[in-house]
Structure formats: structure tokens, C-alpha cells
Amino acid sequence: MERSLKNVLVVSFGFLLLFTAYGGLQSLQSSLYSEAGLGVTALSTLYGGVLLSSMFLPPLLIKKFGCKWTIVISMCCYVAFSLGNFYVSWYTLIPTSILLGRGAAPLWSAQCTYLTIMGNTQAEKVGKVGRDVVNQYFGIFFLIFQSSGVWGKLISSLVFGWMPTQEAIPEEQLLSCGASDCLMAAASTNSTQRPSQMLVYTLLGIYTGSGVLAVLLIAMFLEPIKDAQQESEGEKKLPFWSTLLSTLRLLRDKRLCLLGPLPLYSGFEQAFLAGDYTRSYTTCAPGIQFVGYVMICFSATNSLCSVLYGSLSQHTGRIALYALGAVTHLSCIIALLLWKPHPHQLAVFFVFSGLWGMADAVWQTQDNALYGVLFEKNKEAAFANYRLWEALGFVIAFGYSTFLCVNIKLYILLGVLSLTMLAYGAVEYLEAKNLARPAASEQTKPAEGAGAETAM
Image 1: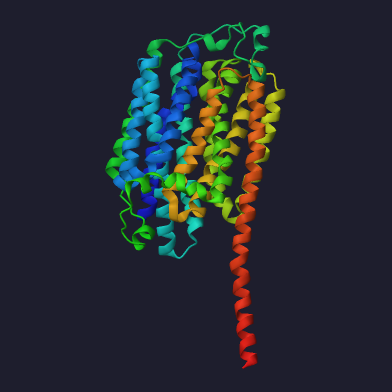
Image 2: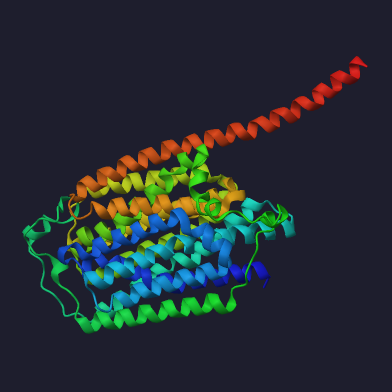
């Protein structure tokens, strides 16, 4: 096995183990800790930490420790969050959520930077186009990474499968599920059926062990890597504040500002799935024991589509894939506004999660590859900006989750999606103009040369 592919697989399986734990915990926060909105507040606080760390930490940590050890340090923050869930209170869950948030932005920036450098290095060796190899590596990564949702949710579903069978929920209580859920309904739903503490501790033990294994895998088997492009430009020691503010300085690039809505919408739609679809649709109607299985469908579809899109983008281009993702999510949002969830319609819960995963795979693979290609010389700062905007989407979505009705949240999603596609279209237009200018100048040079020869 070639060296670059081996490192891509090590990163991928490390993230698989880590997010098997975190993904399972995230999807259950709003259902397990619904008292006084603790679970949703913890998620909002978590992504608030991501937002703050995205501004400063990624470039600093990556330059100081390199991509490998930045990933290791950041993974330890995720393990701390798993430990914080063993004794749940405002004094344990909120601080560990902040700690995880501080580690998330450097983790993802280091991962994206590592794969981009590895892809460009390999492309140079074999004589291929850099963006094609980078797309391929991101496709492999997300194929393996997204399957973490399958394993994490399968574990939670199997553990919670030991819960006693509950009685059928009355029809009148189902009226407050789905888009009609305003979180103020007095009727008790299946969300009140909480697993025993022993089952919760069993699940947390499995998740914590998975996170520890992820840290060990990266620390022992991932090779450090350096950016040859930055080395060729000279080993310049940048001032501390210059490095610290590199993320914010990159915002002067018009393309980056226009791309902001892409990761912003990614945060909105993931937050809706994790916080609202799991609680107001799945937990409210069929019950919390089905959350894991429904989310497995999302993760499996997401995983398969990720590797498919990585290959398809070389033939169709990214514009067609973005159009596919936008149309799919648009259809899902409209259908969720109209649908009245019922336990007898169990298959429909899986259809929506599968379609949501199919569209989410577009944002996950193409957004990361797009940032890597457009901002190749400022990868760390660009990916930090990506995480900053995505975290902002999570913070806003989880922030209003406790006091807005689900139908209002769906309308907000619809508006953000529309803005996102308009801004993305503007970026593609600018890129097309930039590519056309060098081509036009190259065509005029020979013509000018020919005219000069004729004159002589």
C-alpha cells in the first residue's frame, strides 16, 4: 500500500472511532437531557466554543505542533466530553462542552489541511491534477468517517433495546409532534421514556473507550507531514499576532465572504437533524429507541454518497452536485412542513433521514474540497474560517431550538438554503471570469507576436 493512502486510512479510521462516540452522544443530547433544555444548551455552548476557537486556534496549533499532534490534542477534548456525560449537571456538561468546542476547530482544520497536502503531494508524484486527487482522498475519508454514525447509533440502539416495551402513545398526543411541535405542549410523549441509568453508563463506557482508541491510533501510526509549498516560500517566522489573526485577515478575500453561507447552512441543517428531527419527529412518535436506527440510515446514505460524489465530481463538476444537494434538501424541508408523523409510518422516518444524508454528503465532501482548491496557499486559515461559519450555524440553530416552533425552524432553513445557493453561484461566476482572463491573454500573445513579425 502506498504511503499516502495508508496515512489517509489512518486519519479516516481515527475519526471513525472518535465520532462513533461523539456522533452517538450528540444525537441523544436533546432526548436524554431535555430537563430545562440542558442537552440543547450544551450543544449550543459546544458550538459556541467552536466558533471562538475557529478565529484563533487552528493556525497557531498547526504551525506549533503540526497536523498530526494537533489532531491528537484535539481528540483528547472529545474524550473529556464523553467523561463529562457520566455525571450530568450544568457544572460538568457545560465546561466539557466548551472544552470540546475549543478542540473541534483545530481538529477539523488539521484534518483538512493534512488531506489537502497529502493529495497535492501525491498528485505531483504521479502527474495528476491536484484537485482530483484531493477530491478522491476526501471521498475516501468521508466514506469511512460517515460510517461512524452507523456504528455509534447502532450501539445506542442495541443498548437502549433493553428498555421495557412501552404502551402506544394516544392519538391526541401525536398532534404535537413534527412541524407542530412548539416545545410548550403539556402532553407527555415518548420522549419522557428515559433509559435506566445503568444502560446510560454502559453506553458511555463504550463511547469513551472508542475515543481513547482513536487517540492511540493517530498518535502511534499517523506520519507527520509538512507543506512543501510553504517550505519553498522560505521558513519565515511570522509574528505571533500575524499568525493569530490570519483567519480573520483571509476574510478580505471576496470569495471567502461569499462562501460563508455554505458552511453556515451546513451547521443549520446538521443541527436541525440532531436536535429537532431526532426529538420532534423520531423520539416524539415511535420513541427514543428508534433514534439510533433512523440515524443509521442517515449515516449509511451519507457515507456511500460521500465516496460516490468524490468520484462523480471529476466527471460532472461540483456545480451539478451542489444543485442535487439543494433540490434534495428543499424537497425534504417542504415535505417535513406538511407531514404528520405517526408510529405506523415507521418507514417514512427512514426515508427522510436517508434523503437528508444524501444531500448532506454534498456539503461535506464538496465544501471541504472547494475550500482546499480555492485557498491552497492559506489552507489552515481557510479551513478555520469554514469551521467558524459552520459553528455559527450550529450556535444559532441550537440557540433558538428551545423557544421556536419546528415549522418556524424549517422556514429558516428554507431561507438560509436559498441565500446559500445564490452566494455559491456568485463564487462560481467569479471563478469562471478569473479562468477566462488568462486564457484570453494567452490567445492574444501569439496574435501580437505574429503581427510584429509581419511588420518586420
